Length: 232
Ligand SMILES: [Zn+2]
Image (cartoon, rainbow, N blue to C red; front, side, top):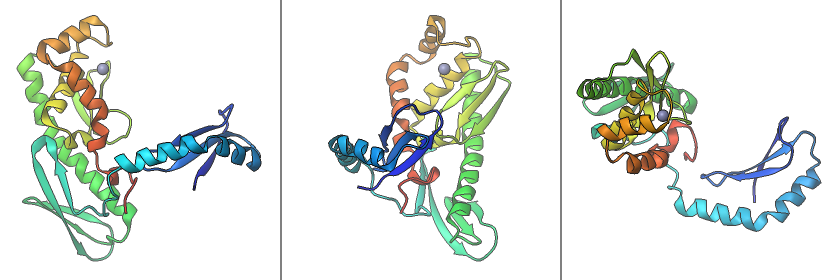
């Protein structure tokens, strides 16, 4: 069984986590002796093995990187990825539904960054007009839209009515994305999650409960390469 140990200033006791990739991490208070860590892992061995087996069953097999294709469910696009080779900075050129990567494509970090940049541009082009249309349809106003690419949240709305959308929404089904947009637009009228807020959401999206659950599970639609996990 392999694992990594992370010392944490804030940790008061040892905690073990099993990631969906099967990676095991133990977080320990500073200067925890190795034999205590080994003993801790030994005591939790059967739990860890069970979690790892679960992760193996549910995890998708490692995908090749760079990916062979990128599927954007929200707009039903499938981009084939072509490696043109070359040297220097990695560039992405999009034409038709072909993404051509040129430059030093052996540099995985640079390829990932270039693809994420492209994803953000695509998100701006696809999600921007969709958010506008949604706002127009239901009479909402917002100040501006920004695209982020983060692992923690799908969207947000600031007090200044800036709506942030996660570029990874591109990988989700259209009805789930539309719900998220109605959710964030409703925050331009209600800056909380109180009853009035949910009534507003329900008015424009009666299926919001089911779609909110689908959104929570939406991370499984995001290919591993975006955040660099489980990539062959
Ligand atoms: Zn909210």
